[in-house]
Image 1 (cartoon, helix red, strand yellow):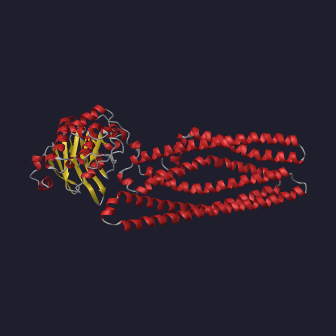
Image 2 (cartoon, one colour):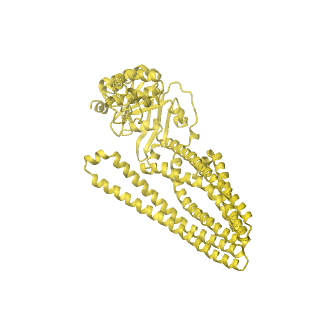
Image 3 (cartoon, one colour):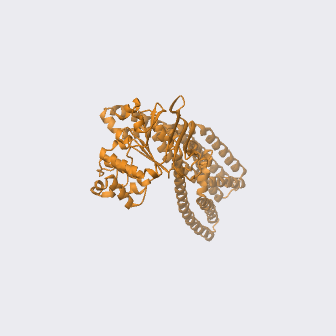
Length: 562
């Protein structure tokens, strides 16, 4: 998907059968709408000429056509919603997949308000436009037929219709760029407001603690004011051009009505023909109203497609990561890695090996580069130079889905889904007997079953009474259930009480022969049990070895003796 239109093609391709269904239903629906005025005018002409039986027959036929017309109106609405739902689901799926495929650096380009609006408002704009586009294209064909009919009735009536079309399209053309700019400004202000509202909710504790409510309220009020002003300008701008065009068409319609009366008085036109002209002009009003809406919609669409496309353009190319290697030792190698800001890198020419079948600790002061190693191992970002490999295979070439079946990580942030304890664990491994076994080994089974709802207790709710230590162990239970060959424990063990982290270390000691285990920590008793230790400082490896070999290093002692 090299451009926004490629995304649309993919979505429409997924919805092909519904697009076709919507097209044919809409075509029948609008064709019936064209027939009704003709039947009405014929019935009027028959009644005017004292042919009452024929007039009644035409009226009865009209009733049947109207029933069909309204029936297809319902079917067309159903088809619209089916297509909308399918497109919305497809856009959402693409968006979520591409967010997953983005690096952390790429995602930092989006604030929370912008991302939420892309995944809601912008998807809605795109779906709404393409669902309505089918009907709008049919309306173009409908307007063309009306103009041809006008010429068949009278040359001047036909020319008047063409003049109206030219003037209306001119108004649409003049308004295009301005409407697009107004839409873009409104979207930016909407994003900013969403971000600030999110900040308010997520930072309510700090707002209370530091007594900064007034300052925060001022920010919210300003962002709200900016949004409402831009929204007003956008809507007034759109309506100004739209209703100017409709006013023009209405003036022409009544002018032609007067002209038609003149022709009738001269015997050059039937009353029925005048009624058709009047009714068809109503459809012209609707048609050009649709064209104005198309113009507005296109401007909104362009903004929304550009914004949605940013999720895609920054994501990695999966075709470059498609290999599923057969690994044996799961040895990890960092070879001449340069990562982060080139002028102030987080990892600067870093070289080290992590052997499979061992517990390896990576230690360093804050800012030493530990988080950079985790970022690269989890493929959250990419390095500028060098290669990170597993069993001599560049991890950038490994299929993404396959890669995360062999690598997993947890940190000290206990982030759970708002579902039950059982479901939070079963989403990783659905073997409930194994879940209970691991929870017992970690010493949290009894804490869980003592809760009112046991394993069915919803996490992140007011009824969640798990202690912080138990929650951290629950987090560790997930990585043990995942049981990937490479496990990364990023600062999580130090957050446990001593009894708990000794239990975890005992479990890791039992499974290490079949795994590559990496621990980021600073607790002496945790680090000292590692088979190998890598010491970092200012983004560089300054020493490597066992605890006994490093204990004489002053930086190492400074870290572990804190």
